[in-house]
Image 1 (spheres, helix red, strand yellow):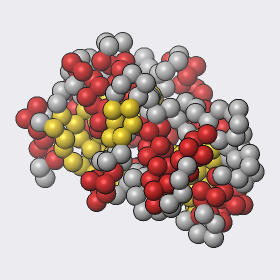
Image 2 (image 1 turned 90 degrees about the horizontal axis):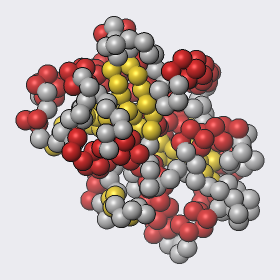
Image 3 (image 1 turned 90 degrees about the vertical axis):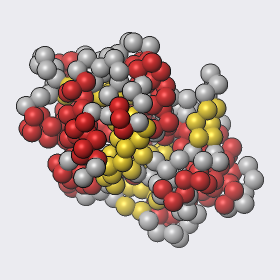
Length: 326
């Protein structure tokens, strides 16, 4: 099904753009949120959450009186920076719980899944193929046939740095199997001859919005937040259904430095690294993510809110463990 965000969604995108511009001037590269408050909560989060985090940070500040200093980053890259001690963050939020192990000595052994989403093909009205993609969304054309048209540019993120990047690979491999089209995955990955198809997350969304890319692989909630139209993928390709856990687990991606990531239903998880500057503040922010205010924001942006513990609950702050037991 093809979807297009209305005026409300576009206003959210405009507000986000203004907020990012102002905050980047005030805080410098890599730090998007309000600074200048000594008790601000430092959060590294999956860059696909950028639009939603702008709203979550505002709600958290209204409730707690505390600002949030946010660093949007690919989940793999963010974990590396924390592991190596380059960053000390009160909260680490990932788009794939598998990256928690990359925190190394700073992995506390627990996390909380607070939201789920799915993979989609997203595009804007500026795409040269928007009409065909509209038809694909209505089931009148096969999305893969549109993506294979001459000159079609399908963007994605780096699978070695970002879970969405390797989930794009998984989606294409599953499509090849389910549609019984040998070579489909390689064709989708290759793109037009001599044209780059892998981009940082922020660049990917901007290029799709302006039409310099005809479409990109996004999470559903992320695409909605950016005001993009979407083609939702069938069967397991969207990787959003927990019932597909076993089948998705057969897929894997090995990075250039030898790390393996396996397929799994898409889940966003949060934890407090052991080298956090203020672990109590980190626990407070995660508790907020599980509350009604945050769940309302997540639902509006197209996420499916959840409250599921991961790992050793004995190591989890008592306030969080108690909340999850309700």
